[in-house]
Length: 239
Image 1 (cartoon, one colour):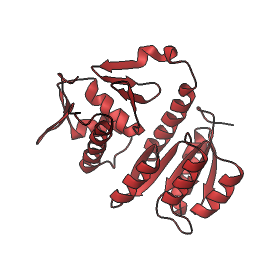
Image 2: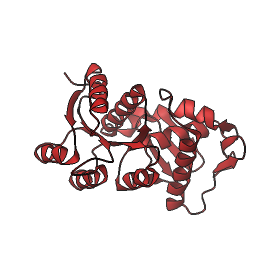
Image 3: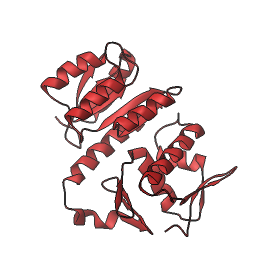
Image 4: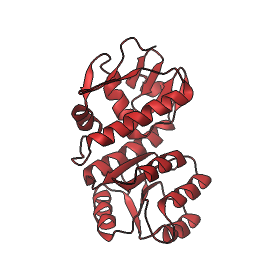
């Protein structure tokens, strides 16, 4: 039996409790699940057959998550990868995203939130194979910004943005209400609807990375304002 998106998920984490808990939750959703206690064991299996999605811890024996991610990206640019990280691993988290991870969750995390992210990534892959016109109604356009809310894709001035699922969800919350201030709490609730462990610092990190990614394609980007003491706002006059 396969999951709603139709796929096999590999869980790679040296913590048995996390492997078993996440594996149980995903199997309950109908996904096929393979569990690995370290990166080397996972890589040996992946050399024979790649899974359809990988949930990957960073700190592991024998082969860590960053090296495993690097090897996986050399095999496949399209394979969805979600990192699991501790709160104090900010540098590793950034490196993981730069290596091509699609999203990350900080430990401790909500299993419901992880399942939701897995579902979203499978949906993005499936819809990415369909003609764009099929989801035209789910496209948000605001000046130079275009968000495909079905495929979880974004473009700025017709240039693609390599956003994680989380980054795109937070951007959509802001862009749907230009000129309105969204507090960090509102962004947490709407960007992470199932996760009780997200902190305001995590939201700040996401916004910082969002701005950085926009700046890579347009150094003059200034559409996301910080409203000190309150939160963030997508500017009404952003072009």
